[in-house]
Every structure is written in C-alpha cells, then in structure tokens.
Image 1 (tube, rainbow, N blue to C red):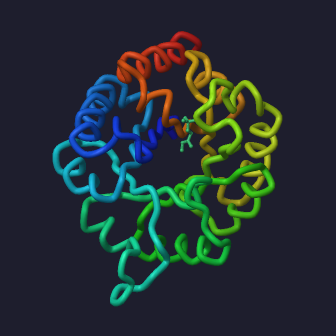
Image 2 (image 1 turned 120 degrees about the horizontal axis):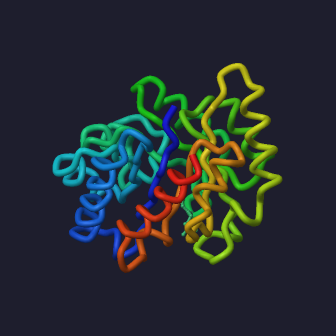
Length: 227
Ligand code: G3P
C-alpha cells in the first residue's frame, strides 16, 4: 500500500470555491509526478466536490456526512449527495465536527453499503481502538491541541503513534492509520512514516502556505531521500 497524503481544505478561504480548485490542480500535478510513490486525497467542502471531481483526476473526499436516510432532512449532508457530486469517501468525526459515537458507527455502516470510503478521526489511541471496531477504511489520529499549531503530531506524539500503529497491526483486518495535526516541517511526513503510520492528514501547513505545491514536494523529497 502506498503511503497516503490527505489534505483537508477545511473551510479556509484558501481552500474554498475557485481557490479550492486551483489548490486541487496543484496537488494533481504532484500526483502526476509522485503518484507512483504516494496516494493523494483531498477533503473539500461539500459545495466544491462536484467541480473539483470533474476538473481534476484526484481522489476527492467530503469532510462530513450525516447518517440520515434520504427524504426529509433539511440542511443535513446525505451520503447520496456526496456520491452524486463525485466524492469517493469522506472524513468523519473530525475534532471540528464531532459526532456521537452511535451516529459515527451508523455513518460508517451506511458508507459500507455504498462502497464509500471513510476516514474516521480519533483524538487519542484509545479512541483509535474504539473506532477500529467499526472497520472504517482509514483512521486518522489527530490530537486536537496540536491542530493548526507549529508542533507536529510526529514530533510530540511518537509514543501514541507507535501505540496506535501496534494496536491496528494486531487486528485481523488492519486498518491504515494516518496521523495529523501541526504538520509543517520537512521531516514531519518522513517521521510519521518511520513510526509506522500509513500517511498524514494535513491542513494549514499546505492549504495556508504561499507555495503549497513547493512545500509538499519538499516533504515528498525528504521521504524519497531516506528510502
Ligand atoms: O484534518 C487535518 C487537521 O485537523 C490538521 O490540521 O492545520 O494542524 O494540519 P493542521
């Protein structure tokens, strides 16, 4: 399995509307160049999914959906709308959009029926273990206190990453683990992979960067050099 670089556009203006498409195209260029080494996933706002899915060749995820059936659910996000727009999966339970545990379980279950991928976020290794029982496609460990800061999960939470990696590897169907929060330095991606993670989930370090493609390429090259 190729390591994964997942980029969460959040609701940053730099990752909204026209800007989201421009950023997605920059990431697509990196995919063309380094797609043999890495899998690239972008998680964008619901309204941006349709256009980005059509105008780029990159895996597009939503950032959330609600475990609702179609019909009368004004203002909720249905999985059907994400699929129709071209999304291949969605983040769930991001610390900025927490879900009740029973709703999270239900959402993962619904996604399986549609063969729709899920990347479930977890605040700590205990939560990683809890959500693993739902068998999502991916789990993303993100300590909330490090999100958008300058200290990365790779630097500050090495032990917890190792713990989560070990736990998931020991399960029957091992679920790939991504790690995220504060990833900004050249070495952060390489360290995460060295610790056994299958990839990263990053936002501000790329979405808010002046030259996001240049930064991401530096991280990729850092991994390449140490291979
Ligand atoms: O989902 C990604 C995330 O919450 C990490 O954000 O800005 O610390 O890379 P950031």
